[in-house]
Image 1 (cartoon, each protein chain N blue to C red):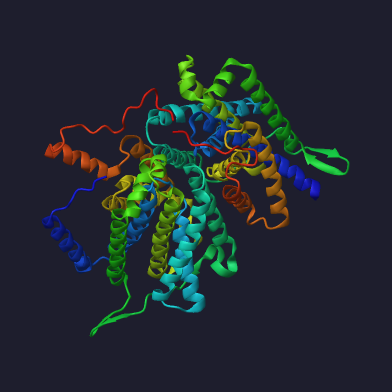
Image 2 (image 1 turned 90 degrees about the vertical axis):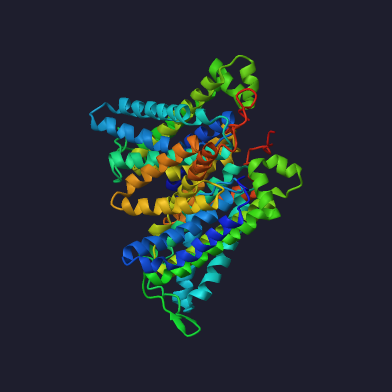
Length: 340
Length: 288
């Protein structure tokens, strides 16, 4: 897709901005704004994870909210019942979501692509019912409270305790950078290209000798682990997990982020996460109106701007720079009505 | 106890079978799973409820709900899916998810989230068979389901339009070459599938109440039934729907009611894992 080579100049600017972002807490004094920025980072990680499977591999999942929940609950349970710290609960969350992600991918990716949607929807429902009903382990509707903050980091002579929202920000930012790095490495690798080939034409990819099923399941598993890691971060950041966070709406919200920002684009995932987190905070008082707007936006975006905001930026850029005079056709006109 | 669960299962199963028909019919002509089908079920029930509040006679309110469901399905197709015929399947699917969320929350915005009961002329009357009491509304559901299936069978096999739908199910491009208006066939398919789905929602209304998210589980279970029956296989969907209802009813009765909805989900995952082409289905071949 937009595999344009960035110049050295652009790369240096990106790196400077990336480092400068660590200084953001010094500029913001309001803890509430810091809290929202932290939430954006967690959602960015979720959106990056979902984009791996939706944007790069072309398989829709509406169960990533459940993977997020499994990550969060695993961290919470391990931290509370075993008493491990964040650095040990995180691997737990990752391993467990990877295992469950593998199973769900294995089940859902078998026959036709629509089956994954239904399998993930069914899975999300089961997981939610388990959170709600398995009171001994998950605390039922009350959830689990009092999840400890990550231990103080000692670096040289300095100490970094986790006391307020400002302290979490660098940690979360590092994880988002890690997510971006992994995504980039993945999609630039042979494996990532195989995924894109499957997205563009599954049969052709198969004919080229790509093990379609295996590739899809692998990518789905990786995508689930992103959400697992985000879940562990969420649990230790908010100190509380409860079932109403990890409903079907959560999965839809993550999907909307990817669709609004632009599927198959790292910047798109982050833009989508930012827009939706801010708007959902703004619409906090009227949640049903929020979901109403999300649903409408998904339909409009997919009908008219299937590549989201990043796609729009691309079009504007192209028009503006007059690099490509050829108008890109959104879809090759097929013979007949193109039903198949 | 055993017979009570069996009757409950058959009633549930009838509803799932009705839902499954919608999925399967649309799948047949467009090779697409209408994710928003559950919202038609909810929409039909809500329109009936609303009409009843306006002191409409019950039969007219029911009919109005069914027609509203058909209209909703028709509009869904005309407004969104028809404009996306050349788009990748993925986009169509995401659009359907969007429609589903939109309609759910629209209903919640208009009517609120409190569950309400639809009235039924039969709800508080029982029939005694032997030493067992059966709710008359249950009998009404079962009879109506059988009737709908018979009408549908007649429509598919005896009318020109039904035959056109069947032809489109086999090969829609070839259907067009034969001079059949494919868009009209697709519209009719959506309208009929949705009408049947809305009827399911209305029939359930007096028993399980009407609320904005009622379509999620019903949709998933209807879909489960259509997968069990073999995607695209209408009689298969009917049988599988009944089977699913009975299994669910027994499992909920004997295991745990908290996990009631999880039973069908587990069955779905199991079927997708073991026999994704369904119990009565053939191996689906991808078309190039």
